[in-house]
Image (cartoon, rainbow, N blue to C red; front, side, top):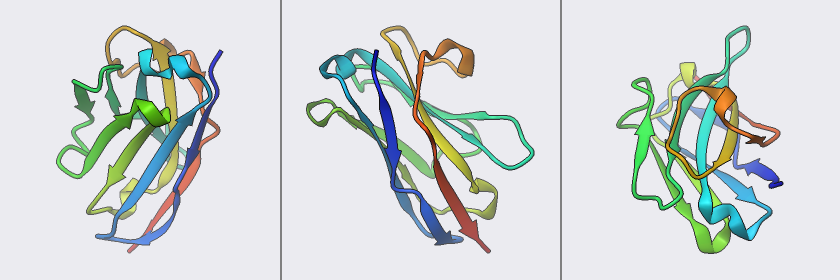
Length: 124
């Protein structure tokens, strides 16, 4: 069992930046694939991006490619989502999700552990 806690959300103007953090409760976090998903009001939850447990591979949704960057610091049991050039359409609750080993997948059902979410609001 691992607990994931997101932080760093808030209100930002279009074109601004935010960095979200996903902190894990277990030392074995370093073996987990971590992904970020988001859910806007009235919409389905969607894949944003993910990072392998080694940090050697990342994958991003086309809508955020080139603007968002995922990184991890296994010594701190934390994964980061750096969001630049934010747009109003990036407004959503952002969730981190984890699964043991394996590859990055875009299907939320493949992840076993979820955080509670953090709100990101981008004003125009």
